[in-house]
Length: 174
Image (tube, rainbow, N blue to C red):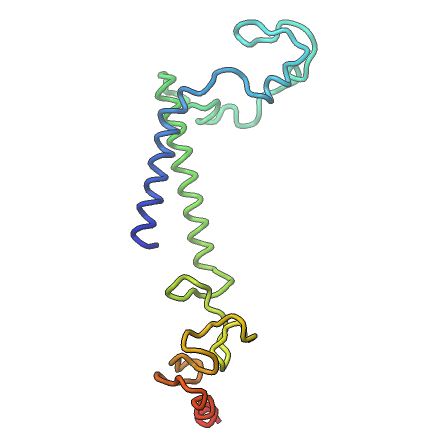
């Protein structure tokens, strides 16, 4: 990755850490849309406990990870709610960044589309005309059609730029 891109990535990471560590503590404590829809038909007291009626929330059970260290937007064992929520958010951002970075690294290492040119474009298979697509429309070789672009791997030598060079390349190859 270029130096300029690292600055962008680290700046984004810093913003995400600030949002997760500080701003998340100021999120609404009121239930979101899903929680509210599950409470329709029930009577709820000021603490959010169901006191009567009939609604889907009465059948709700704790999930398997309810006792995990990061359950309920906090860290178990940290008594300060502000600190617990902030640390939980920061840990979540760092884990997500590490997982995403690892996946991108694997994808880059195992790129099925092939290598990239120094300009960042995909390097397709070369044809004798220097046209990566082989259809004459992509304008693949900056030296022009019918040239090897000075690529010895494509059958040309450095400096082969004339259409007549194609005949010399064929003679050398044959």
